[in-house]
Length: 424
Ligand code: EPZ
Image 1: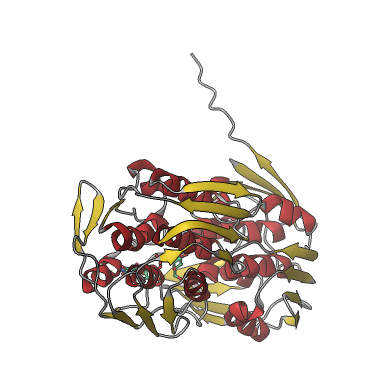
Image 2: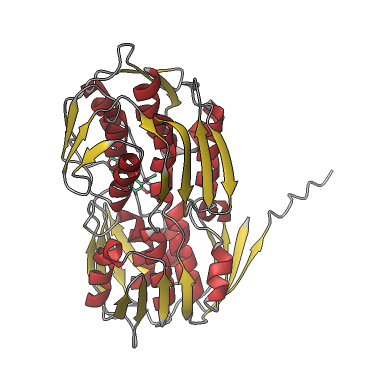
């Protein structure tokens, strides 16, 4: 699948942001801990969510989508094994480990593959589950977690504030006997949203959003209703896309505090903005100033906006420095951005960007979700046509991408796969 962009046309206008992919991918598995019916609202219709819904159905959860609301019903016994094919396809399937072993005493989940930004191990997830009494092994490509006598509360020390490990730890602790304290926990807004949803379902989680989270185990959870938070990464992606031509761009249905790390950096680059309720309006006179960016766990600058910010800095006045501190190999966008005229040199986890006055369109290839987003942002600003191959990577995390871009004045269209012509 390809996205064709006729670039060089500044975007402006308003765009409505969808629900957060990374909140949906942890709150959907959390439903496994409940008994009865739950309704989750503001769930984006994106590929990763569709796969997660298939996984839930595979283990016995009844799922029904009504627009952006998902109705889920958990009744009776669930299957502890996640189907290999689908599970392997979605890294976030590892977030079923905690809920399944907490509820059933066992879980079998395909070992998540690495991806284009690094090896993506889950050792911290397994260490957290073992601290609560689970026995974790890897056999035939499956991660197996067993706790025949149930889980018990206890202290968990995370070597790194891993988002996924924190989420698995919280979900496992919710039904453990006794109290769990998670130290060096991740502080991302998606963790707070998970805790809010779990507490709505009857859990007792306090401290989410700080680096110490306490969970008092309960006997069981009922279902409930929850509306997930807006997607702060989609928010940042559209702000940066709109600012490539100076804007003004308004993003709606957002939580401004969740994108403060980005706004602070954009202000340094000369961007002006007005924050009003759930809207942010941003604009820029002339070219952005060069800045230094370092990705860190929340509330630092988010690694998921590093590729998109790198594209924004291609047109800056001066030389910018971007250092990627979270993933070991998240510069897959650099070579493709050079095809569009970007001047970037990478040295290990650091990229040095020498700002240029203009970019020119070219055929480029998306290899992962946020790398693909950085190509869209640069392609929109590049004069002439840019064709992005690998659009399926963007469909994993951006709902109605071309519709939202067209609403901002972009000239974009999707080209389905061109059948391979086989000459016989
Ligand atoms: C979540 O991934 C997000 N995914 C990622 O977003 C995001 O980039 C990441 O958090 C960091 O913010 C979802 O929420 C589904 P981590 P996660 O565990 O949980 C190392 C996107 O584009 N690590 O915080 O996998 C790991 O290798 C995606 O939406 C271990 O060493 O991130 C990485 O270097 C991409 N052992 C670092 O920690 C572990 O057991 C951060 O990983 C776990 C992680």
